[in-house]
Length: 220
Length: 347
Image 1 (tube, each protein chain N blue to C red):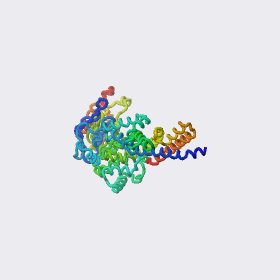
Image 2: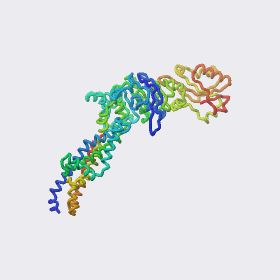
Image 3: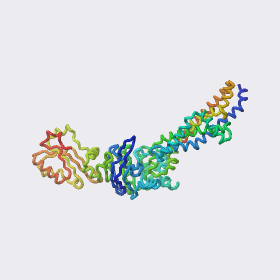
Image 4: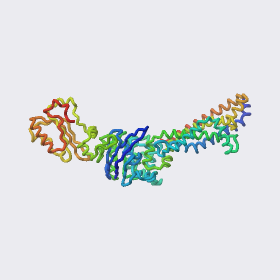
């Protein structure tokens, strides 16, 4: 068994890194695009300080549209776009394109829902102070939801690990790919179990870290 | 200081329109404490929120310190709001900010630099008596302390007007008193105009110079607090006053009383005179006080007594005549001759 593990090690190592790359890129893009999009969904909502029905509807429809496409279909659907952007449709970097596209609306909705939990009165008091919309977002909304943003990112990360297995199945690489190639096609249970255990450990670590950070940034 | 002309606010929801504020005209002078009372749903909160355009009126004019708020662009409106402080029933402090940061936020909104912000915020905390809590979070404070923080935040930019939206309704009676005292001090020391809305007449009695009573979006009565208490005209006003000064005599007691019952309101200078004792000396009647109180509103005495007068019928009538000559408000609640019909007495 030890021998099997040593034989598998280089491949396992490579797959693990690929998964981390895919999930990592997905997370960075969700933070960069999903976070502002989520805040936009929130502040343009009814009775809020940047209420704008047109913007809210368009953003809402786009988010729902992407979220309603099953990931494996989205992956294939985005192949032309991925090819245009990266120049290939295989490998972890190419897979990150679809992962990012899926993660953005997912995270945006999480951001929106944690922003909704803020006491509207606090925002109102800030408006009554004569604060600008940008200052309210930056200085009131953002600090109030910081902990929720971390929790949301944790959930997104774990979902992305799941998605990355699908991306792996059609040429993205990563742990999911490894499990399918050996475990499914070659009936190699050893590889199958090893990858499953690895995934369980990875998810546990992410969840633990996420909870820890979310708690640490929570002030009150 | 605050001029409101023909202000209306109509809400549209699900095809129906609901009137929040109905054609209100109001003038609030520089440096006064103005109270607006009414039950919930009377539109007082909406009216207050129109004063800093948190709620945009459907029609009418809101002018604060000569500036027509409705005509301002968003940027100008933000600037104007910096000179209108506001405090709320629910305090509305940012939970993730310390006490000091909450106060400093208002200064940040008006573009004050970092160092200056800190200094000014500390001064404000001294003013509201919370300088030792600067680095605590709102969750660690009591209700009264939270309201003090929000007062400090509202005062940060040296406003001319302070709007109080049921600011003491969530507080216990003692804390309410201390917050009202603080508001009064601020009003006197900084010359700040304060508008407060409340459903507690006690609050109005305690600190308001003038007040208005609202019902169904309209102002049904307004005047100096003293006059409102001494000579209420509207039924609703009377009901509000009864919550503070109650002169109802229980029905069962009333039936037992044989004499003529008079309710007299002794106002101003007269409250210092011995009206009751003079009355009994100059007329051959006997008097029995059933209810009575002298209250001080705006440092003016307001006496209210309910007395039973017994004796010769014509003498009692002459005594009541004397009272009418001296006092503005004398009401015969029950006539000795019609004591049997006590149910028909005037309220």
